[in-house]
Length: 196
Image (cartoon, rainbow, N blue to C red; front, side):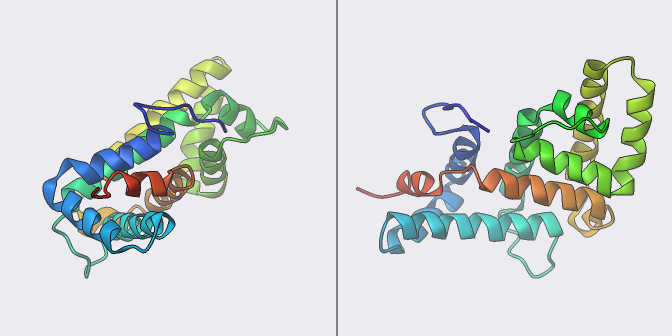
């Protein structure tokens, strides 16, 4: 999957991570300190990636022992990353895959959606109903996109103590975020926090 440059960054996902890390002074200071302690650019990128993954994973799972002081920033980052993943998915291709057509799919977000819908009953049954009730591929793609976006949006507003009650959505969100991490240029995010 080829991602285009976005706002001067390698892609939208890299821009989103930087945007959220630099949007609040406390988060920005913490990330800047991480980068300053790193021995080189690669180590700085890995440190930023690990920090983001730990924070986001704690938020997604609602881990009780996590630091909650950045919860709102983490929630917004998760929402934006998952929203971008859903926007970059090829929904027409997803419908073709769900209909059993043998096609090659290089889009990691589309693959994750396909795997989640086919393997998880919570998604499979409503998706099958949409496949049967829509008039054509494009209408079905739009309906699937709208339905899944609604599921994610509703889950995002659930309090941390209740997020785990929808394990199918937790798994989907977690996997889409992992896919997004794979396209983030972490060392470039870190470079933006280096003090000259």
